[in-house]
Length: 71
Image (cartoon, rainbow, N blue to C red; front, side, top):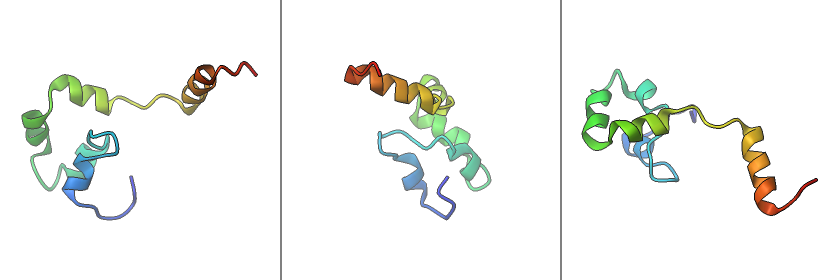
């Protein structure tokens, strides 16, 4: 996602403590990434993190709603 080489540790620890959604794409040819992930994360955690992010408009609308702004 960043466009240059990173350590495996960096890919496992994002800002929210989870792994990067692209970890399988970036590491599949270097290690048994599927086996590694199944050892340390539940199937539910993996599915949750790999699910597509919400569209930005949804995030913006949620922020506006939380702030009490109606436009």
